[in-house]
Image 1 (cartoon, chains in turn purple, green):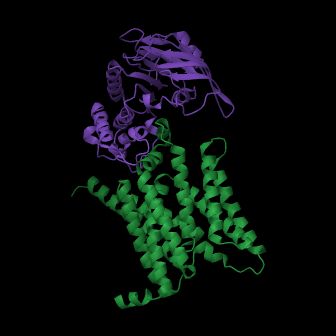
Image 2 (cartoon, chains in turn brown, green):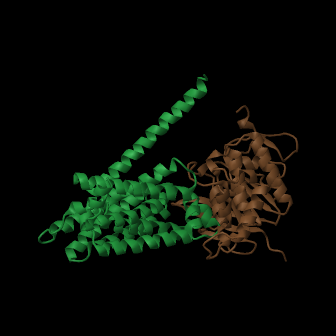
Length: 256
Length: 282
């Protein structure tokens, strides 16, 4: 029997005495595209970090392709929030992407030609190869995001985990990013994306979950008013455009 | 001029100081670059000041002061590194406490040592006359070790400085790498005590690398440029300190500080000039 790409059971995480995640249960098949929305501080980044094995759960289990997160690190590609970086840090696009190969280095002190080949491929995949010698501070928000995705792709992951990839980029750049993630997903990549931006959800998304300490998930791409109200704890109105159940605009955000 | 330089470095203690200065420059360039880009200048300051506690305790116990400094510096590096990992403790508070308590311990133990034999200021500001051949060998060994470790860990050090969490997510032992960096800082501080002293070492870890960072965005080039700048500051500083009979460490730091100020002002003027040209085309 095929192993589930992600299997989370009864996950509870407490940080500094505060209950961040409470009884989170869900699973993903290989090739799924899960979009997790929720308010800031709702535990989205914490969930990603628990999946990556960066923080220990207080209770419950996380399995990635049947392994513990620590053992499954080689299957996961992590794309952190690009706004967290020191823009003055002296590093080129090329060196950032090579970092994706760190996990494959073992005890070797240097990157090999295979590492460089993988980094080139990843950069070409996100169409940033021509920028490889640029300093990261010279990139736009969208380009920076692509570089971080390339870094994650350089390790040949089976699952891509993205933390707010569309924060502080404009709608056109967002659409490009979604197209790119959609393409990757079609090629078999499992994608988990967290975002507090529920204005527009990509039509590539198959499954949507809401997270605010508790995880509300019906295993479908449908986003219901009840889910959102339970998550945001305030009345929510859904207005659909285009594909029903796929592209939503949150009523109270209209006019922004 | 040449004759004067030959005369200055004809003295054994000045030759020793020059050798020490060249090795120190490698440390300033290499370790300083990582200290600046990882933004751990104040952590390095804490480690360096804490080492004074070790100096005092060693003096009190009749041991080699540098040995005491090494124990305290490494212990505080590991301690600060451990605190940084957990979010509950305020890191800056902890650094401040380690910093000042280290100094207090040092002053306390030196003051209760019978006979009060040593000069506190030579540890705080360095004293090149106290440099012995054994110190030079210790420096050589430490500098070579730091170079070897940096070369072997370079991609990992760069990655951990840029994005510690990602490094961890791919299974690179990022915390161990970070602790290695802090221990390198600690050992650098110890071998630099006689040369620039506990208080001034932080300036030389910060200034050359941040000047170099204004000219290039390539980490390797920053290391090379800051090492070269350090050689320049050290050489000029030693010559001036001999001529004026000033404290060598302080003279070197003053030169470096002036260069830093000059570069910042020049940059501002340059930007203003370019900006002015753009807004008022001829």
